[in-house]
Image 1 (cartoon, rainbow, N blue to C red):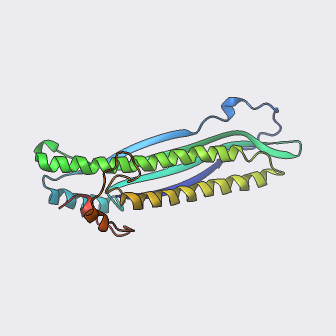
Image 2 (image 1 turned 180 degrees about the vertical axis):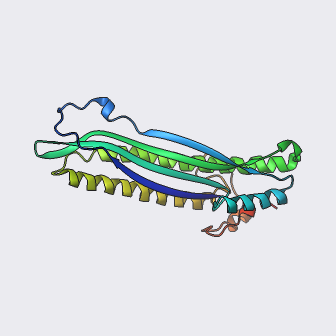
Length: 224
């Protein structure tokens, strides 16, 4: 399951004053992606024990589910005035993506049957979190394009406001996309049905599919 939190930060460099009309390419580099992956230990040799450990760890780490993805957007830019207009003289968009996943300890002490279920469930979860990462990167690319497309404004204050609005719009758009994705994937309990590797559900399973999973219990991460 997933708990996703999107933070936004806007960093502005001091104005540099008048600048030459030519803009060096290194002043507008591609978006920067910073990946951070952390694991929390899960101890248990049976499904029941593993589920209990997942619940305990989620509570201690204040996670809403078995997996977690957080994306932090940052904008580093400088501006200058030219011919009574204000425009960007440099721009760097960065997204830092933190992914937290469970890691089973002492796999050698777990039976083959339990280990198979663990690997299947965590495989689905990893693909789910990778989907959120993909969404964040795509949104960072879109944000950069939209910021560059703003052009010049009558004042640097107007440009700042427009950039703030683009950043807020990006965060809200990503949150909506991820929310729809969580519903399709049951918060990481199954592959995205729209994915080529998704399996076909039987009518019986489809009839049990919830429209929302706001209070889904972590123990449902595995089949009992």
